Image 1: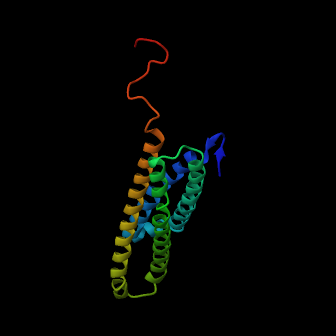
Image 2: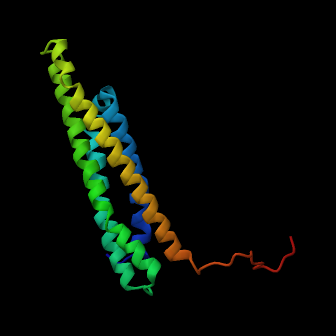
Image 3: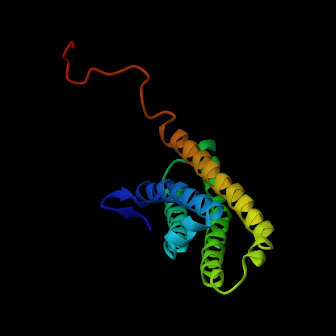
Length: 172
């Protein structure tokens, strides 16, 4: 994947990742903590996580193409190395989103069939899934931030002037 409408595809595709990863992380955290939110969200949670999961390799592949078409320096290499580490975090978001969705479906179906006392035995599992979801969600968001910051530094480190330019010659 190289160019989209004359622009490097990576420049466009990373916007999906930058929006979808934090959105998916937030949705997962909320749904993992509050079962009622997971029940209301339903299948949307794992579908959102799946779209997020697919967006990462697309942006990475487009980034690899772009890396071959720009001057390589330490900043570009660092950005590429950081970018390669996002997929496991997003894979974790997807797996946990499926687990939270499945558990919410199961608890909805079994709430009418089982006595209230058996739901307490599931509390440690619910807490463990919630904690793991928070850790993975936070890790994914922090990783996206680090990757984006390194990409911005790689793209702009010598591409602008710290002093404003007066391009039209007016003295405003």
